[in-house]
Length: 150
Image 1: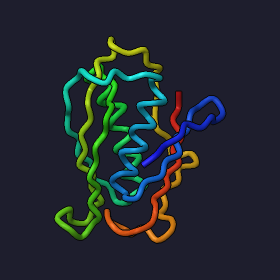
Image 2 (image 1 turned 60 degrees about the vertical axis):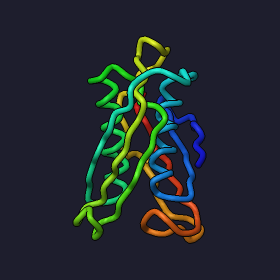
Image 3 (image 1 turned 45 degrees about the horizontal axis):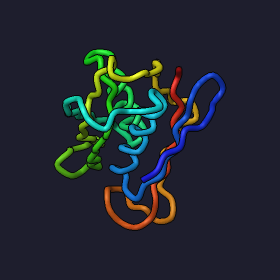
Image 4 (image 1 turned 45 degrees about the vertical axis):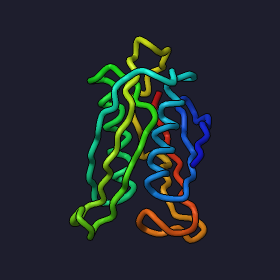
C-alpha cells in the first residue's frame, strides 16, 4: 500500500492505492498522519481501537478519518501505524459497511504536528481499479483521494 501527499489550494490531499479496501483505509490514515507530522517516533504511545459503520464505502472512509481527528483532539495523541479491517454489508456487519481499526497514539507533546482541522467530501474519490473486489480480497487495486482542511 502506498500514499502520497498532494498540494491542494490551502489544504492538503492524500492519494493512496492498495490491493485491498482494508489496506487502502490504513494507507489513507497513514497519509493523514504524514500530513500532520513530518517525523513520527518509531516507538512510544499506546494502541487504541476504533469501530465505525456507515451506509457506503465513501461515508465509512469519511467517518473513519473524522473519528481519527476526533481521537487526536480528545486523547491528545497523533494516531499512527494504522491497521484496518473493512467489512461489506451482508456479512456479520448487517446492512452497513464497517471498519474495525486500531492505531498507535503518539503523544502530541512528543511530535511537532500541524493541525488538520477536518476531512472533507470535496473531491473525495474511492474506487476499485483493475479488477479489485467489493470486499477485502481478490486481484486489482483500490484507489482513494481525500482532501483535508488545514
